[in-house]
Length: 136
Image 1 (cartoon, rainbow, N blue to C red):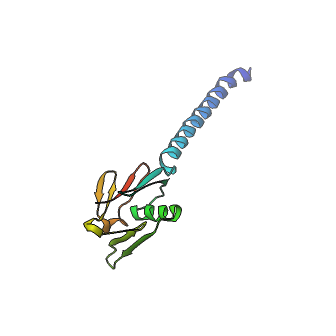
Image 2 (image 1 turned 90 degrees about the vertical axis):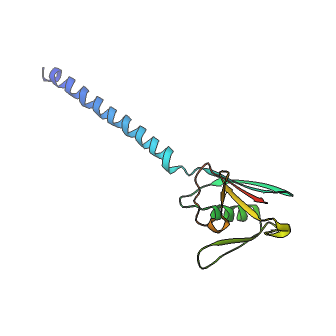
């Protein structure tokens, strides 16, 4: 007789535990997909005589300059730049192309918006971003 009274109570407890487990599982899955997956960014070097394409993972706090340095190490590209005392970047050379030759300069774009060269080390990137470098 005691079992008949106790059984509905145990069923309710088990259902509550299962419900909490399902909710926790979906919350953890959602958090993992939204914030822990780094995502990919694309870097395109688009010069008249050369076009190179790189894709890689983005880490938290990554800048346009960090992405360019990563592409340089992976793609065996020569990169020559300086950072002055005010933390402003100046790019001298990319893969054999010299900045300012024939009145053409490196222009950097992040998602089709111009980024000042001096700010390459300040402009953060995220998964899904596209960086393009042109010699205009």
